[in-house]
Length: 415
Image (cartoon, rainbow, N blue to C red; front, side, top):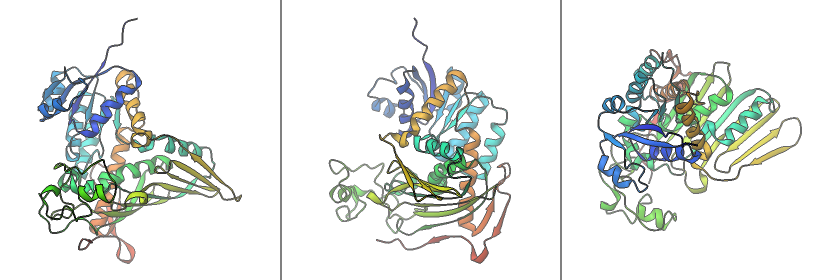
């Protein structure tokens, strides 16, 4: 029997995340070839290719030239965040299957652009939302739909990020690109909450603060050039010596910019309240200076008959029965990228290319999550509740919060 023809993919923005996704595409034994890459770092990318996977890959610096010059089965977009929308719209005009990194948009104007661009597109889109496809969330969804706890009446979610310094010492620190950490981080969590509830968010109220990171150091200062490198708790020296990270001290200029620099705008903690169309409310909290075993990510879903609690860091689901004094615990084995969700994302995109099968993380999910995060960002900045619209013209309305509302509180960085 003849070997199957390899699916030909093109990549716009070949960064670390998309490299990982491309590797995940290969785990199912379905042949995939990286036919083209659009990225100005062609020589650097070739030099990093230790597998020979890119030996016959064509390189471009113009995405339109790539899309028009190579016959592709699908396209992956992994550019910096502020370019996701523009690149996605280019792919939409060709009606090609698309793997799109999150957030799908970083402004209300970009949301409107996506709405317009994808209005008549029939090709499937896989937005990079691995959490909703993890074994834990899929099992929780099954429990909810079985009526185990009754209808979900209330949700509380948290994300205490033990590797949070990456949002202040690497390219993520560029606020113009990422537009804050609701869009960069909460987009995952707000997506899986909407997925589990099966409802669209309507109202958002949020607060954010920057209490630890930022300061008076030069923006371009890197750890290796800093006189505090053996004293600073965030330096590679002390990450190795005190926190036992890595096998040796390593200074990487791309990821060791000073976290106490002037110009840092990303918040380091945030909270938001969400009301969904059916009236259910959720609270979500994220923190970026928790460390080590303080890290956690998960939620509690409250029904009248019971409560479900889950956490990816412990790989557990607990069900608390409200009518009997009983608790049931489910433990998951194994540790996989994005808690197992990346594998499912890869499978969905393979089927999107090969069979034009719809994905479980379509463009609408990406737009809804982006709108929720934009509403949270706007609420934190304006101290107002924000009502989410359909994304064609921005938020529907904002109104002052009762009792002073929510707002972004900035303070001198703690040391």
